[in-house]
Amino acid sequence: MLTIGIDASRVAVAQRTGTERYSYELLQALLHLDQLNRYTLYTNGIPANLPALPDNATLRSISFPRLWTHLRLGWEVQRHPPDVLFIPAHVVPLLRPPRKVQTV
Image (cartoon, rainbow, N blue to C red):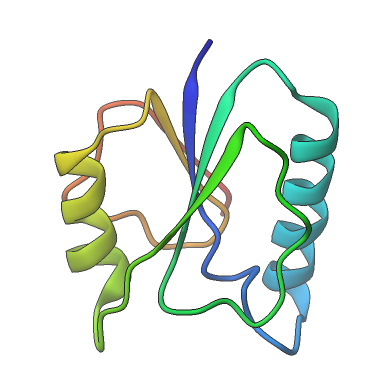
């Protein structure tokens, strides 16, 4: 069983466009299909709208005013590293776990 960290900050917005829509649909499918692995979803503040979370998923709402991905998310995944971190946007934290997946 893996712990998969996901930058869900793009999913947690009220108005979803390209990256946000892609992230939302992918997250919804992963959480529906995968009951084996554990998921930690990271957001910058209280999410506007997330899919219902199954028992194997937890939400980490970690507010930070600027450079959230580089500073706050990077620090969080160093402190509590997931087995793999998925970033569905163009920015990978400067401080990051060695195993990551990024969508460009």
